[in-house]
Length: 484
Ligand SMILES: NC(=O)C1=CN([C@@H]2O[C@H](COP(=O)(O)OP(=O)(O)OC[C@H]3O[C@@H](n4cnc5c(N)ncnc54)[C@H](O)[C@@H]3O)[C@@H](O)[C@H]2O)C=CC1
Ligand SMILES: O=C(O)/C=C/C=C(\O)C(=O)O
Image 1 (cartoon, helix red, strand yellow):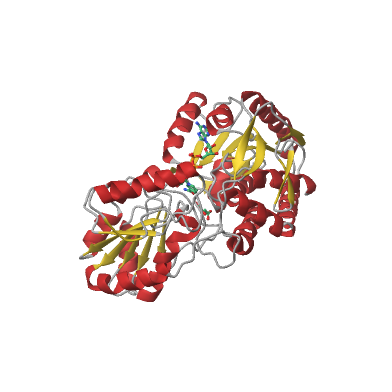
Image 2 (image 1 turned 90 degrees about the vertical axis):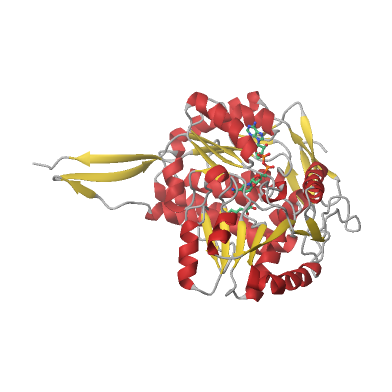
């Protein structure tokens, strides 16, 4: 396949992007499409050598990018947004082939959101500021100074969107970037490098080192010249990164896994609740925010379940490029087997699958049927461990206290969803839920000014709006005595 490959008619470099140039490695790894198991690319397999070069390039570029005035940085970010928008069809097609997300959702929502990430942080940069405040005649003025080189490590499930969610604020803050994309879906990062280059981002301000987590990823997070690490991925990997970061005291921002609850109270609009509950199967459950524990009040449980099943049985599973498909494949065979292990254990522990519960062989090799478990015994693994597949559980509750106790009963705290028509209850319950984000009578409504992240083992820190600048920049207070 050489150092370029053609995916869905789009030419993509399979090399790293370092100092504004393509660079190969002696080794490669296979990039396999979840749609049909085909090897679609052989991608450069970087390690410490490539990471050293990329970090050195980013350090050198920081000299100019960090000094570039905010308005000029914002101009480049907007040009990147425009470049992404011009290439929506190509980016969507490549990412669908690479990561298995629905093509229509990539075209309509996900790739446009990647562009929005750049445009939003350009705007936020220009508006960034805090009111000055006085201390005994002294004036305090807060500044966000460019901090240096940031390392970004991103997962496979929404590669372009989650990478740009970090790259945009990092660049906006004046930092320079080394990105290590996930090895299971590495291709759109390469296209993004082309777009950023065409948009006028100086060489070295954005670098991509391809490779495996335990090689390139590990080398990057232990690098002494990295000033920030932002990671989205599993809680397990976060522990390894935290250990490496501790050696250099590098600040980290972690967006991790979840096992979020969706609460349906007896006064909820059931149609709306059912629709959003079935929506948790989107992207075949490979969404960190997915509210995979459905908690339904006893009085509406018997009405909820048949409606849920009817809607869920109507979902069409198949090739994510087919406009009829609602649910695509799992990312890899290894991941599908992991999902299936969770399902088998749930059965062994006494849970009853009333939907799915097995791979969908008719759809293809890596497709897993949307699954719902009921009668799950307390303490069953399926109630506490993140599956990251299309597997939901349904539990009854009697009252608010029990709903909150069940909702908060995991080591995670990423998000929570509440359906009720009672505003006072919505406020009461939202206040007591342990979650970085609570959605009331809705799901996945995102405003990029909002803080985003998780409580407990779902993360460390928050990104979004000013929170992103607080992390990527060096925040400084200048306190000036009264001028005589
Ligand atoms: N909170 C959030 O916003 C999100 C969280 N996630 C979480 O991510 C997980 C799924 O993503 P995966 O890619 O499987 O996670 P993962 O933790 O296996 O991998 C994520 C990234 O870390 C890299 N990596 C692996 N080992 C590393 C090491 N020792 N040092 C440095 N980097 C290393 C991988 O190459 C990849 O780029 C799920 O748990 C999910 O909940 C996913 C999306 C969003
Ligand atoms: O909206 C965000 O910033 C993050 C969304 C996370 C996902 O889409 C995901 O984990 O799939």
